Image 1 (cartoon, rainbow, N blue to C red):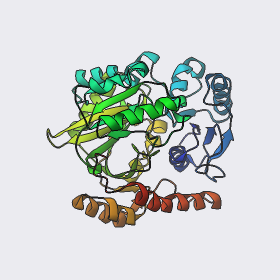
Image 2: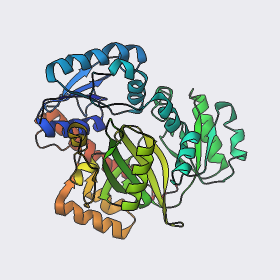
Image 3: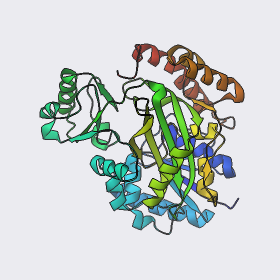
Image 4: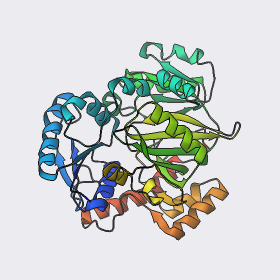
Length: 406
């Protein structure tokens, strides 16, 4: 393979997983840029870390990232710039003109970004291309309390910040803070929005109709589209468990890879019709009442649990670096897990799904993001074990018989 250097924006477990995939391709340590050291990447032997305070601000990003990309391009010939958080994706799109000619991969236009990130516009796009989207209401800050009377689809419902990774939401603090809220009734809704307001979060909220079903009804799809807008890779996963700690709800704890040709075709048509480029991560739920997938949102980056794709035999970054001529699809069943086997045994309430997950754990074997055989850093390996086994405690504390509506 030709020489290249990957630059990864973000220092969390997602960034580590992306770094693993690039390191697997050419043995070159990717450059990970972050605002502060994080235990999931700090001191790793398979990547290089550069801490740049303020990197998540427009001023510092514009001053640092194009210059670093140019330096690495001069040294390696090709550079791939991969954002692993929503705010980094937004900055890459904002400063795409400064990055033009420096990176091999491309980013979508500001116009398409607005359509995909604005909830009502995304809902319209889903309707246009035959993707079912839950009924959704965008709640303006001044209307938070009065909106409880006008949703039109009642309780229970799903509530979330318009962007849970936005700076102002990430940096506010209040009891019970989550990425996604499952609201049972009006009183719980009012308690939640009042806590947000008191904590100083003044952004928009999104309320959506609740689609019934437990963790096993949740699905995720990761895709990559080349600079020409053609989809190069698609991989579908079914959740075994969703994370249950307040700050982690909305993320997956264990995923089984799978396949659905009709869904692949529909999502591919959606992306290529929009001339989408880069990574796309879809969160969905299967509605057993209508036998169809309901698309909740699209994240314009690799998903936090996207290493599940590797469990199914595919390296997402190979699609970036090698640009296959035809689309590569995830097909084989395999298991990715961020939790120990005992957590799946105890908390996966679907007996059939639990049996499948445990069988896949044994054959072909479980895949885990932070467990890299070539990782020589004792610090990283110790963190991986602590993070892994700590989930036993978090599920015991927060799961509480979760049935999908809590």
